[in-house]
Image (cartoon, rainbow, N blue to C red; front, side):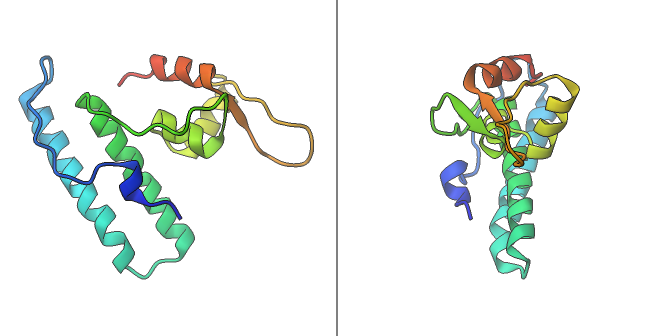
Length: 137
């Protein structure tokens, strides 16, 4: 299981409102960031199956990453590679793996599937950079 502290910063945000961001939106983003951190901290204390706990953890982490991008704060990046598997590529983009697979099926992102019976998908770093530039935030 991944350690959430390694992926995202767990400190409360005290950043000035950036130019072009509405004050109410800025306050809403900060409140949501704080709320998600509290939910993420509360996960280990609940009795959940490991697979469900990991799914919740990933959902919270992806939402926190999107908030940090909207506030122009640093976000985590997977290790630098030429090819990424679906989970790492989704982390790089700040979306869920299911969304990335859906985007691939729609043609918004391109991947390579090795021959054989596996359903592994590999995404090139240049392709992920192109998709990230095309995202709104």
